[in-house]
Image 1 (cartoon, rainbow, N blue to C red):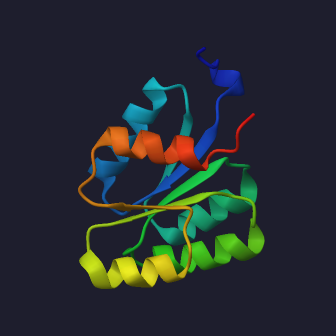
Image 2: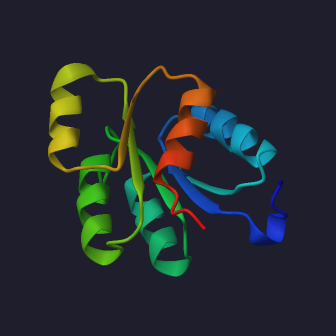
Length: 126
């Protein structure tokens, strides 16, 4: 059963690649998620502190606050918020990321079905 926009899940997607942000946003909105995007970790932190989200999807390598920093802050300030981490920087960054225990990890490039499956796996069941 499809959810209406009013009852859809809110997702914050953070990546400094604006083209990727746009693709992810369009894709997730097809599935009736409410998607907010941020191009920096600092912008994401401001949004997290002003709105409620059901999932945070963050790139790891970004200017100002990295995705790792954002993940650590999120764990402290929003302990119940599921976090999906994504990166295209290989094994070393993956190891650093998994040490901080994201709820799900995606290696770029990934297909959008993988992203959708990741979201479904971390969302609390109603």
